[in-house]
Image (cartoon, rainbow, N blue to C red; front, side, top):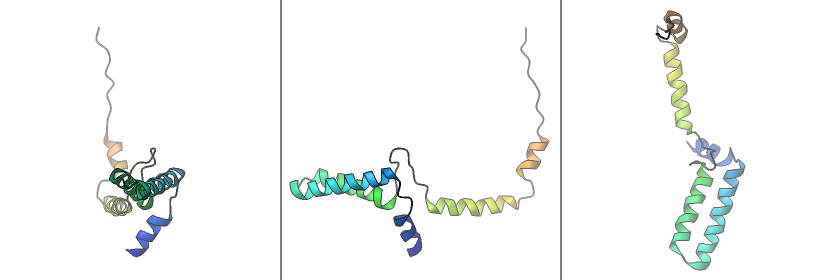
Length: 101
């Protein structure tokens, strides 16, 4: 569990994640200087997204690691199923539909 947290904190630092960290630190400094609760909430929001790599920052959505683990478990279960996707696609017959006059 601790290695998963460490991996999430230390990997995938794309440019938008750095920008979110900078915005969060800038807003945090202004929150301390101005004592404005709104700046504090905004600072915590951006810092949380930057540190945990959650949220969609400019389209850079971070996939959850648990979904990846579950997907690999499900793919191995479906690979062992009696009917595979290739067998299903071989059985499908298509009929061309023509325009009626």
